[in-house]
Image 1 (cartoon, helix red, strand yellow):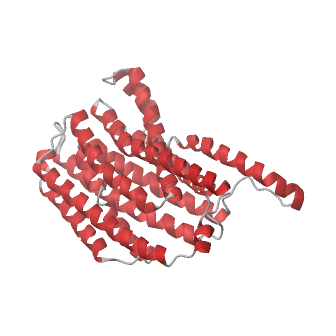
Image 2 (cartoon, rainbow, N blue to C red; image 1 turned 120 degrees about the vertical axis):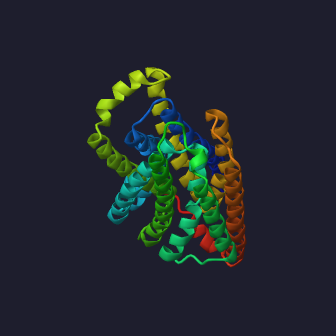
Image 3 (cartoon, rainbow, N blue to C red; image 1 turned 180 degrees about the vertical axis):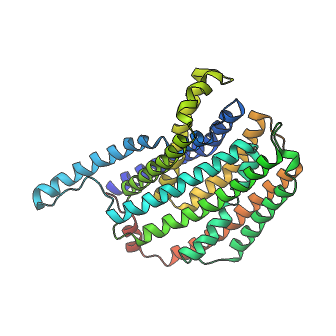
Length: 357
């Protein structure tokens, strides 16, 4: 009965995190673009909002802590063991601090791209992240390349090249070539940096000398978001964003109240993305998380075209088709590899991976 209840709760949690990931993956970029097209100009503020909602993480963490302390109370009483409230040890905390600063930089690069490029173009460039992730995973965690992986990298690279060759027809009105090209390059750098961060997180987990639980992953994510927000806060202070926000709110096309509503909901929805990603990875796998993001790419494209009347030229259609083909190729190869690995995995190994706090 316990095993059945555990399976039911885990499946429910998986469904919930899939929903959160879907909301964050589509809603976050759409709200960010809405901020810019209606008169917002603060790039550091937008990057701050990507992780500024990190206090929301206290809600699931508090629930996890209460559950953990309740289950540990009997053991503490009978065995005299000491209960520790926080799961993260100093080496993992230091690693999450460094990763948080990198994420803060990546937030700024992505926000700059969204400010200068149509969202549909920006989403297609970000799709190249998979190619960078595969390359850095090979270098950092010794991930083996397959024919499917190489095929995906080639397709995603060609897709980005197709966009780069026809950028002039996609430039928003009133924007200079220099700003557009810089936005294109910085978005590509953002994809490469995030492609480096993901294997680095995996390497950190492998090198951590402690069991990785869902509560620990949430702690890790919260610390990363905190330092990413701190990094962007410094940028906002240097750029005088705090003084400019009230003035920008008064001049915003949709009104002052809606300006702040957009900012608040941006922070909340971006945290949905982060919570969804780590939740899906814990309940299932990083493969499923990547598949969901891949499936949602056309959704973001269509929503951007509908909501902001963005142009959808032939080049974008070709790049979208190549990107989707690359995703399918990559994940089909991963599915085959995981199926092969699962056949050699023992029940004891599977149980050891399910470590709850």
